[in-house]
Length: 78
Image (cartoon, rainbow, N blue to C red; front, side, top):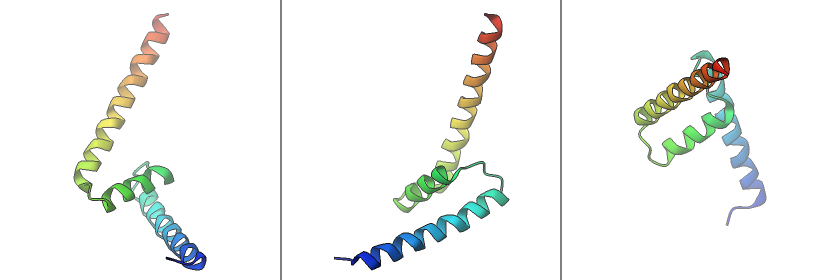
């Protein structure tokens, strides 16, 4: 069983990895926040196809944008 110190070292290493990935994400303008980035990394580490995940993220963004536009249009109509 890992010691408390080993667990702390793993947490710090994971934080450093996410920090680096966050910087890369910002440079690439992915518009993923830290939580979304962490969840994406976790999904990929657990076997999700990265290309499929990227497609799903893009589709969810499109759907969200459409929903916001429809909501704005219905607010204007009221």
